[in-house]
Amino acid sequence: MKSIYLVSLLLLLNLAHSGQTQTFASADPDRIALYPLQNDYRNTLSLSGMWQFRKDSLEVGAKEGWQNGLKESRSIAVPGSWNEQFTDMRDYLGMVWYEKQSYVPSSWKGQRIFIRIGSANYAAKVWINGQPVGMHEGGHLPFAFEVSPYINWGAANRISIQIENHLKPSRVPTGNVQGGPFSNFPKSNYDFFPYAGLHRDVWLYSLPAVASIKDITVKPGFTGTTGSLEVAVATEGKATRGTITVTGNGKKYEAPIRIAGNAATATVSIPDVRLWSPEDPYLYQVEVTVGDNKTTLDRYTLETGVRTISTTSTQVLLNGKPVFLKGFGKHEDFPIFGRGAANPVIVKDFSLMKWAGANSFRTSHYPYDEEFMRMADREGFLVIDEIPAVGLYFHGDTTELAQRQVMVKQYINELIKRDKNHPSVVMWCVANEPFPREVSVTGGPGGREATPKSIELFQEMFSLVKQKDPTRLAVLVGVMGGPSEWVGMSDIICINRYYGWYTHAGDMNGAVKLLSMEMDGLHKKFNKPVMVSEFGADTYPGMHSDEPEMFTEEFQTNFIKAYLDVAATKDYVAGMHVWAFSDFKTGQGIIRFGGVNYKGVFTRDRKPKAAAFYLRSRWNKK
Ligand code: GCB
Image (cartoon, rainbow, N blue to C red):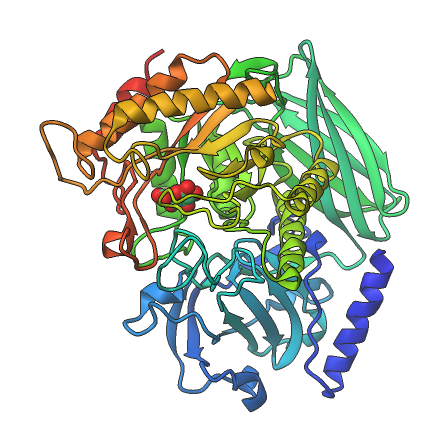
């Protein structure tokens, strides 16, 4: 399989080199398994900072040779969404070009050089020094290509990236859907702004040429007080042996490995193990070195925790003990950065979630920046890690449906490749609110059918997840009015509910009765734990009323309290995630005042509303 990939890659590169055609290799998901690392065998060079930028609304750039040098360009910051940085680009989702010049240090000569792009939303093509290197579709996940043959040594290298974010029904997330549940502009088929651009760091990195570590998969477990880490290593090149060293809690454990067919596995036992949990998010260091009889050729170090996750019919168990998920659905969203990764915002969000007493969040509605996931490991958060499958539907054009299914599978592959070693990740989420035909977000009639086709496609997704990672839970998050058969496939039943808001507006008594009845019904039907993965009310900060009234801070507090009170009466409820952590940008539409969803308990710039103080007092109680 791998050699077929290599041959086709070389073929494509050759073709491209000959100048006959601009053919681009597709990104190999195996390339994103390990985050770039600087050590004595590997190098990294961040290309984040100012880039040159040009709009290509007529899509003529490639033909006109913009990859050979961008004229009439302007400066743009990377990471960052282009929609927020200029006064004329907010709603533009067409084609653009990014360009940056960079030297590659001469000390990297003789190594293999790669480019890694943290996230390009939505489809990207990459050239180095005018040579086509590769392409990738889908936002929110990284991709990488080897660029060794194209590097100019002792001179600047031009990196050109073409990106477009056309909204299409064949894409995931979906857009431009005729008769979809959203009527907003731009026409995304979901409730957040379809930000575009280079949203995360871009890196050049190098790997040793003779042999290198390509992937490390660590499976944790424990029996009694003895922990174990089963470490699977995949290599490239001529390594024949190596060592796995686990360090932590003042001790060091080593296991030698023999590499055959570029793979090796070893299990390391950890007596008196210190388990990972929100109360004690303890991380062990796993260092893998590989080499031959004489010398070490590569080294990679990662941090992970020893913990298990499972369920009973009523509870989620972390390390065999019940845990309740208190927290939020979130977005990567901040003024001016748009969806661009911003480390101070990451740090602030964790500190506010802790302040509020949360122990969990969902990466709604797409995978988050890798620094965010590393923080979750260190800060002890239980994460529901979601692919960008929001606004899925199963009716209409069958070719588009097939294309969406290819994309969701690609996302599952890439996400699990990237995030598999994070102890914080306890569940994979395959979809948020897939829509049956004619369901309406504002509580319209909704066709409740779960067609055989939709069931079959979800089964494919769930079995792919379980095949890639049998150690974690898998869920899908169901929409109000959606068929229970879909959520029934999840390991825990996750439902987004807005009784008291989109239906029973303002009537909290009616709302909680319905919520309570529905939850009992779901638990009875599926005999699995239930979690309300979204509930919330739009709240304009600073708006008040003596008796709680919609859009006021008092109403939001009351709404959240009412839902939490219902959950507290049911022993099968395993978690409650408030929607949302903070206000966030959406498209324009009549239910989104100023193009903002105001359901945050913090404002967009992270100021607490009254509900944040309420959660803090409730969730911090022992
Ligand atoms: C939902 C969606 C979320 C929306 C939210 C709302 O169910 O999952 O993306 O933002 O409702 O506020 O309408």
